Every structure is written in structure tokens, then in C-alpha cells.
Length: 74
Image (cartoon, rainbow, N blue to C red; front, top):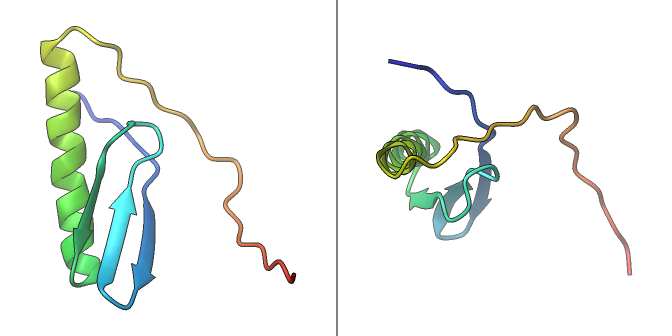
């Protein structure tokens, strides 16, 4: 077995949590709690990787250099 490390972005709104993996297009999920969304995104990433491996597609990873938030006033 091989391990992979991916960036996961988690956002919270009034309906719960939403998570996605920028390196894996279309890999996203939601959950009612932070813990639930983290479990769900781990499962989604695993399924995404398994599907790519079965199709002999490359698994691309990247290293985040900086993650910031920016306030913009208009």
C-alpha cells in the first residue's frame, strides 16, 4: 500500500461543513460536523484514488506553500 498526502479545504456555513480536495477535481463532500466532513472527505479521496489507479491514471499531489484568508472591502 502507498500513502498519499493531499490538501483539504473545509468551509462552514449555516447548513454544516463542506470539504474538497483541490488536487483531485470533483472530489468533495459535506457533513453536519467537522469530524463527519473529515471522515467523509477521507473516504471520498480514497475512492477517487482507487478509481484512478484502476484506470491507470496518474495520482498528482502538490505541496501548499501558503494558505491565507483575505478580507476585501467593496
